[in-house]
Figure 1 (tube, one colour):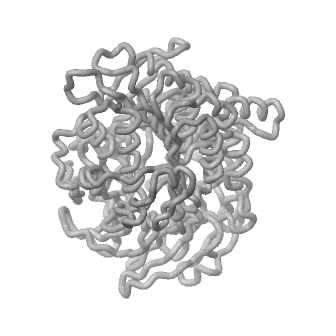
Figure 2 (cartoon, rainbow, N blue to C red; figure 1 turned 45 degrees about the horizontal axis):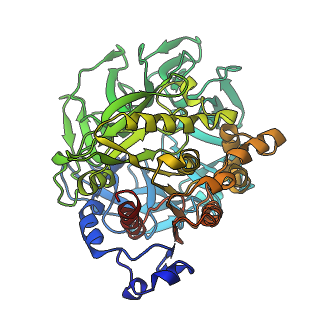
Figure 3 (cartoon, one colour; figure 1 turned 30 degrees about the horizontal axis):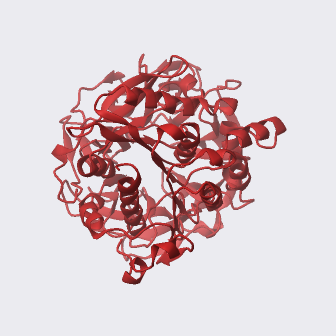
Length: 637
């Protein structure tokens, strides 16, 4: 983003005292961005990606999401390598894109919020005339869940009753405004699938990453029957068996540490593990409409592997594997002959590939632009492990620096969640840091990360919160032992929960870090839990602890960055979206104000039209340019 000239002429002593605004970006203490940074970053910022949304039941094409302007929108692609014809043109990014499954009309449903507030509304889009219509109330939080077999009805969840609970509604496609309440719930619920006879739905109640419950719900009465009653496990997905009316598929960790794909006959109660004796999570699965094929993905240490089965024999079919990386968005076409998937690797951004079930060959459908960069020169990360304070081995992806005569500075990137997982996927920003700044990049998957078993993901819960921070301390030890790395020039960067980890690392290891960048991070667990949106508050209490309990409240306050801000004496950059429903902007404002009392440099950016992260290119570009200047000023020197 190039800000108006008057912005750059403001004296620095004024910037240090007053907020400045250019467009929807408010800044404090951020100096003017040099033109050389803007120019050099431009290529890396003009990388695009594409992801699969849905197959067209009336043709051979598909809907994808990609960005050609400020935000990601829906496009139509008719054949491999075909032009991406833009369908939606909104200022705000569009989520999803699900076609009406019948052939008597050309329309799809999609979701969109305003300014990153995550109060998603459901819209219909008419492919014949380009018109669209708001179907929900415009105020609550709504998600499209499933179409009926005939397409005459769809199910969605909505918080419109009380702003907190995700009740289930059924709407007719002809009269969507007259949606009827199917089931009133408490907490977070989602519909997984709708049976072929339209009489039952599969529904998941989510409690935490290690606890959820699966139910069969009668569409006519709303009554529910629990699958695996009395068992505390975690489900990741569920669907009706298209070949067997009494069968379902689901993934769960009921047999051990990892999510396995299981077939369950509701009549005989027989369970069969489909994914075999894998020691990795099954991240997702899908089946063809005729039930002939089943595809699933295993997450093997951060690398995805695709599996396709013949459901009759339950034997795996030998196929051409996608490029090594991350796989998502899987769906068979209506005839069950093609499988679409989105593939992202360390050297290529997300693109859509299609597997032909007849030839077993993979064809690339989209070719996303990479700003003219030669991505063959991009550094491929190495998987390393390092020992932490309690003897555990912590996995991390290491992007080594380019060859230099002196040890390189290091940026530690900490993922959010906290139940997330850093993966070796395409990231132009990391490559800029490596190629243009000469630094090394490390992505640790500290305890609490998913992908390494249900015991590992629970190791940071409640009173063990700071154990994950100790894992960062152990990584600093590992860095100090590497001759190509400079232990005296190490920075931390992270967003959301990763932002908390940045702040906590900065006060726990203040003397071992040069600076840090916190994006939409938690600065005080108590104020965060009291102010995060009500629909997600109880979910976060399960992970972090209940601040209403006096003992837990005291502990959460004791480990919060605002309480320990006096220990942070190194430069800090805080970036935030004003409309963030997860981590309210007040979390950023209070840590900025508190750390500034120490007299060290604190840069602050607030995007007025963003939420939990930066979805608009103009805001994202300004932030990455400013962060580059921050690294130059405080990490590299």
